[in-house]
Length: 252
Image (cartoon, rainbow, N blue to C red; front, side, top):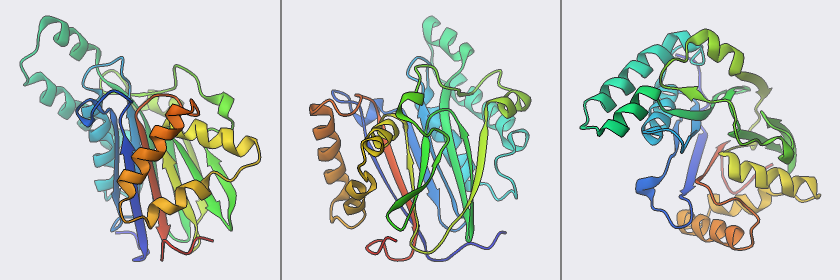
């Protein structure tokens, strides 16, 4: 097993679309500090059982002990089979069966942190932002708010062979120091983040208080509600994850 910094920490926050509940939530996130693996996924609303597929993707990624967990051939086919069996065992209407045959889809971002390095794998528009010394050190895979499109690349539960995923994926590596922050976000929040950055703001400062707030989930929900009320963010499922090493109250 790879050496992992025992000081690694993470915290995640989620909020469903306005007017919906977590029963309808289609994002997923997971973290495993023992293995230094973290992931977020955004299920495509147009597909059926996308929430289940997003959850399976992140859980599989963070639980893998493979030296290269992003190797699609090593884990995607078996996961697709598991999704097919799990959904296929459910009572389905004729319409649901057609959607099941079409498969489910999700964007995906997985990060492996093995100080002093991190590695990221992305398909679609869930994003990673690396903050160091109160500056944006890296943005991945998108770097501008205008780069978000209505049809991002997706990981599919059917018909997506590993060679196809090799075309759709993007990978990046970077250095990781004590005190750095890695922020993982699904698309709506990531686009907001980049818009704020483009007008000269430091949006990560608005996120830091969530890590030390006694009730960060309530604070996050209220904050997202305020952004939606001001039409500063699209009404979409929102997921945020922070990964750091050491004391959350002392960012670099």
